[in-house]
Image 1 (cartoon, rainbow, N blue to C red):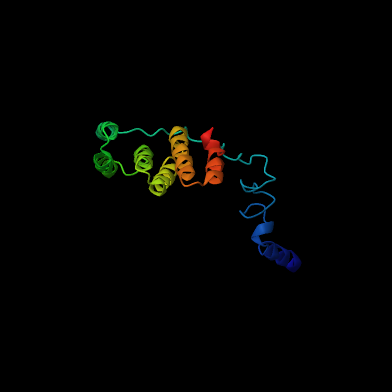
Image 2 (spheres, helix red, strand yellow):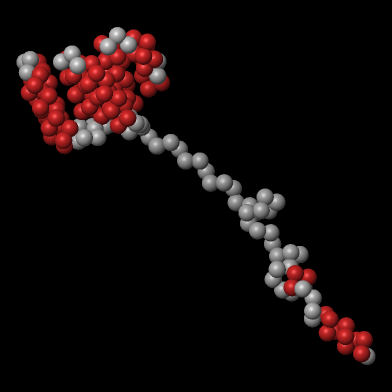
Length: 163
């Protein structure tokens, strides 16, 4: 009888991981959800589609200023056109189309280094806008050619955004 009492008392001393009625027993708990061997493992989330191409536009105010600047250029007033484009850039400083306009004006003023800087700025700002990237690329190639850097101009024209 003493042996039976000792056996019963020892039965209560089992570790929790070996008792089938307690949590923590690997034999009775389902495997974790992130387990590779789990048949109910959740699939990876679907891949997101790339965002649609972005198109930059001029606001009504900057569009009007660009029109004025082009008219001033046509009449030979490059200083007036430059001031007008500067006003447009104060309104929309991150619009690559305005930097392209400014770069074209700088080329007309025979300042190819400034035109190059404007084109490079426009390329950075035009990320995702294939039309603006191509315009900025053409401006950059023209500015480089004006500096007799023909090899670099050809390399720009070979870039994917130029196609």
